[in-house]
Image (cartoon, rainbow, N blue to C red):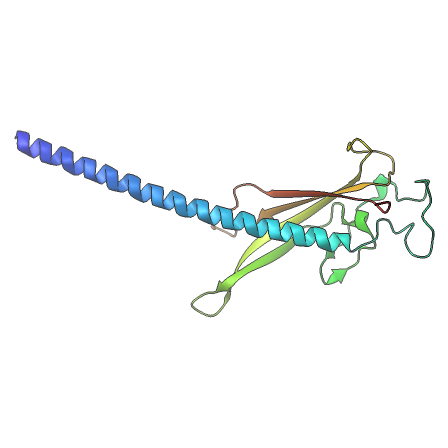
Length: 179
């Protein structure tokens, strides 16, 4: 009887050991997938920020008008984000502040092809926020010569799918025509 109990106890310990090893392996794989998704999200945030940087600081002062020392001609913060759809390939935005509160842009990061030859993609939702900031870096209710753009990238979980990006990626950059 004692031998049977010892054998049973040893078998249970072996099962717990195997279970813990498998759990650690799965957690390691999930961590690796999460890290890869975060790298993809950072790439998308950087690409989006570069796209925004190709636009003028403010449409009211761009073109042939000389830069003034007064901020009176700049777009008031209340007129940011007119709701136009700003995305690559459909460039309806005239300047940086048009990206504020843009309709979320869904970008697909392609990882390769599956067994059927279809592309394997991971969708990410990109949103932007634009605000004037003062010399101390605080948000300003009045126009200043510095606009801060904040990009938020989050993975879109498909129906019943798992979300591997544990937290959204946030990237911030300041723009000024005086730099």
